[in-house]
Image (cartoon, rainbow, N blue to C red; front, side, top):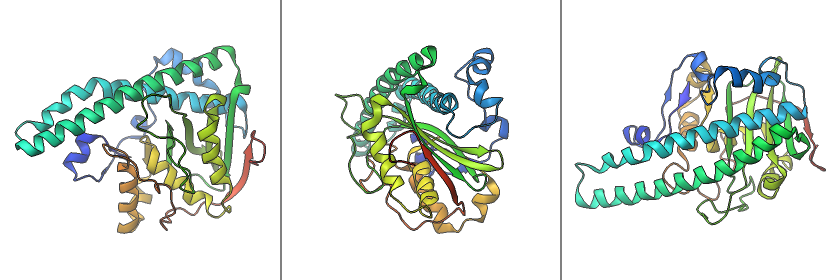
Length: 291
């Protein structure tokens, strides 16, 4: 199942992204590369078992997230003019409000595209030069495969302790980004956060606030992070259908957070939602004091 949190989908569903069933092949397919280059570039993570802390694999997980984010932003930029049709047939006041919202959205998409394009160039250089020493990471080994997976790159606005890290609407500076991948690894699970040295200020602060939690709290924090910031989330329908109504709505609201409106300062605050039973087996990092 995948959540659709684009503006068009949210307008149809009253603001709550609804999970949609999709096939496994669709969920695992990213069309940003031709088959040949995809196979050559990502073979170390697609054809080999994940090894905890393997520098090349960690980088490639993040690189794939950045590539997908660039692909998505380009698609959003192409589709943005078409969203103007949403205001047709609306009343004068509503039409004016929609035009302002869509104008703000286009401004954010254009700025986001410029930012992620610059980040993609940095990641391209690391790939070509194999400078994996420039990648910092935080790896959490879970005792079981996760009921949902995700892969994405985002600009963290606040950490888990509600401390502001950077202002998302500041279009005069390039925002720090961090990559987050949650996936099965052998018979267990792995949550991998990674970033380049140039993005260390916000990314490291976010991860340190996660690391200060007790191990029992980390899995639930990872759930909040995934649904709050990552669009590319796919879940097992059986898991989703077993959740109570309050938990489902909580995750849906997180999935819609930041779509067409500012994200609240306490976005990652613990809201009591407990939807997984994962246990942390091990934490590794190449950042001093984080393992």
